[in-house]
Length: 128
Image 1 (cartoon, helix red, strand yellow):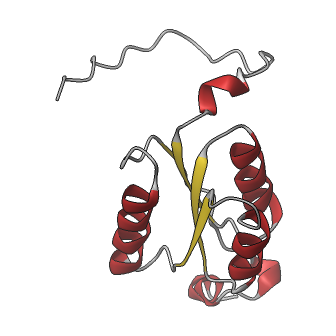
Image 2 (cartoon, rainbow, N blue to C red):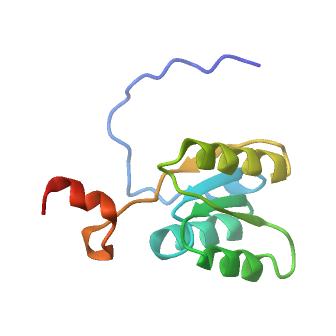
Image 3 (tube, rainbow, N blue to C red):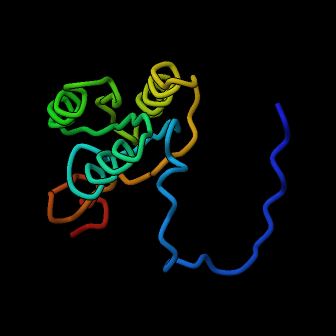
């Protein structure tokens, strides 16, 4: 396997550039927190751009999203996953690699998160 070039900071990323979506075709993408909200939109957009998408979430809605998006062709895989659990993360990555067309993982979007408004128990740690 070729060695990756060493990272070199070249200044801020030009966020005004429109990405070339054609570069997503055939890529294998993982999105955490992909069953709703921004994560679900990323799953849908990567898939529409031609990527195979594996997404993890605690929300069972992921099963519905997977079924809907795979109605004509298997292009996504849902893994019920708690990102705080190492074994769940390993299962997510192994699923992505084994189900992707190129047996690879090319892009990872770490989108899963918690919010005070959802009542996530981790917020209880701050004493409020």
